[in-house]
Image 1 (cartoon, helix red, strand yellow):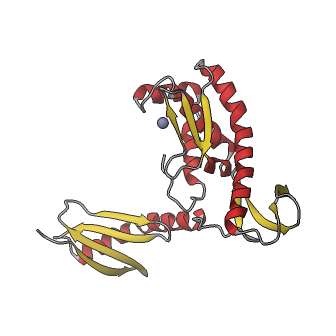
Image 2 (cartoon, rainbow, N blue to C red; image 1 turned 135 degrees about the vertical axis):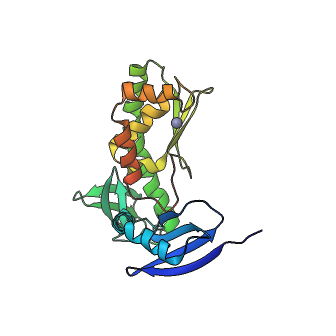
Image 3 (tube, rainbow, N blue to C red; image 1 turned 120 degrees about the vertical axis):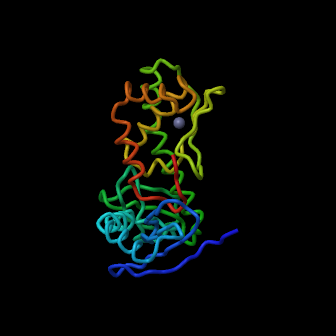
Length: 243
Ligand SMILES: [Zn+2]
């Protein structure tokens, strides 16, 4: 069994990892979070050929790397003053106010999410308090959307819940007529929430992602593609989200 051979190459000031293995074509990739460059190449392809391939794609590589930087991939939030937090697609600074009173969250000055907690409140408890606020906001967004779209699509009103989910934005159990929405959606623009609502409700008409499903999306929500790419273009949470 032939093993893979990994080497490093510097091209135009960029570090490139080269992996040679038994493949037919050369593949160039740029990977998050920092835009690492990796070339998978057939064994017969020499360094010079790899170098040429990278040089030919320099513009594209730089654009990918910029995209990752701008995406500001979010690390675990520490729930402290000054941290960035998102709500409905907008970025806010977190302000923590310690006070002997019931916890509360509000938007102050259109620029801060102000979270009022009792002195000594732990990081995890602060996060719970903020998540409850997100949940309420998201519920207020989803409720009228589900009602309006269920009516428009004539699917009847399904049961729905907001959950914390690791890998999906939403899901629809067509047999039980139950839809789950990811709490993380509270951080996304309203259009993305609407897209998800329509997507999941259309599953009540078409269970799988078939051509008919796409046709139904095109008919009822023709802008779904841009809403979907907006959802994917937003800063990623510290988990990887796929949809
Ligand atoms: Zn789906």
